[in-house]
Amino acid sequence: MHRSDPKFQGRIVHVNLGRRSYPIYIGSHILPDFGPFFTQNCPSKHAIVVTDDNVKPIYAEMLLNSLAEQNLESHLVSVPPGESSKQMAVLEHLYDKMFDFAAERSDCVIALGGGVIGDLAGFLAATFKRGLNFVQVPTSLLAMVDSSIGGKTGINHPRGKNMIGSFYQPKMVFADTDTLKTLPPRELGCGLAETVKHAIIRDAGFFATLEQNTQAVTTLQKNTLIDLVERNCQIKAAVVSADEHEAGLRGILNLGHTVGHAIETTLKNLDFHHGEAVSLGIVAALRLALSRKLLDERSAQKILLLLQKLQLPTHIQGPINSADLYQAMLQDKKVKHGKINFVLPTGIGSCDFINDLSEPEILTAVDSLTQPAT
Ligand code: NAD
Ligand code: GLY
Image (cartoon, rainbow, N blue to C red):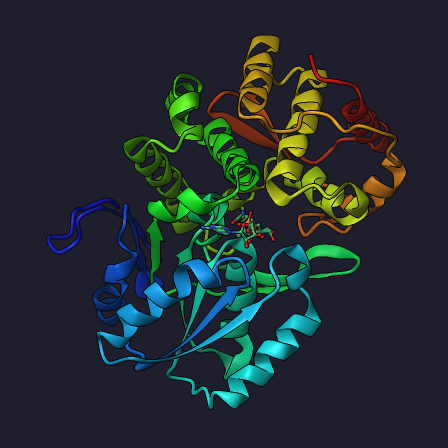
């Protein structure tokens, strides 16, 4: 899965999906060298770069110059930053721009930004003219460790998160960890929530490394960051390579997301970002696992402590309507025959699917989020 490429001074992780396989390039200050790797992995001669208004002034020129050096034509389109851009009106605006740019099927959509841009631009690429080439250039930690890998693309519906979408794999992922220097600390935390998720479900050793290196991670030590992004990519690539369309195993990547997505959908006024909602969802999953005696108290404490050390939310201040949250959970994509399918940790490094939790058990766990976690 992981081999070195003579021309690339960084790490490469491979997502193995037969004809849809692709490399993830990870390195420091690699964005100026994007062009040759684009040419190597994507046959397009014309690119449409989709970004947001925060990322555009910092990184768009570097990317466009690198494409121009390879004699590739490009167009740039930017949308407002934030989750609210993952909506139909913004997607329609992007379809219009594709007509303005005379985009053809052989062209490539490049997502330059965080997970919002990756999901939105990926769905644009999947659907315009029934599919163009697609490349991910993640610039947030969350996008580097999670959303740019695995081909889940889409937008939100007012009644549910990520409800309109498709599986559509990129031709490559190109992650320059230097771009994280300009990422707001709150957004770094969001990427760390998905990182803790990967460690809990798959890798006790990685969890211990995170516990020991909290300071190096939060202060963006170059080698620590590259190791961290690489390990996350290896974990996610292995799961996606085994189960691309989430027929089974891939569901474990949803630890913390059943409650997390419901929080994002119903508690918009509290403005939790995706990774923060996932952190709260992991806490709810811990409570459910403890009440079912699937997880020991000591492991639950260690997980809680790591989330807190990483400055992630572990409780919600203020009243919540847990019945509303429960209704939102019933819209979850993993609901089958009316039963919510939860991923619960069974230790550090392992988890299981549990689909027989009763409504009162779930409501109790959700209500407990309003109590400060100790
Ligand atoms: P985001 O895309 O909104 O980025 C967070 C903020 O950081 C934005 O304001 C953005 O403009 C800014 N930003 C990004 N990179 C920057 C940089 N280098 N310097 C300065 N500012 C920068 O949010 P996110 O946390 O990256 O992604 C969250 C989204 O990802 C959610 O919509 C979530 O549903 C989705 N997601 C998708 C998958 C998947 O598999 N497709 C997995 C996890 C999450
Ligand atoms: N973020 C969950 C998945 O990609 O399957």
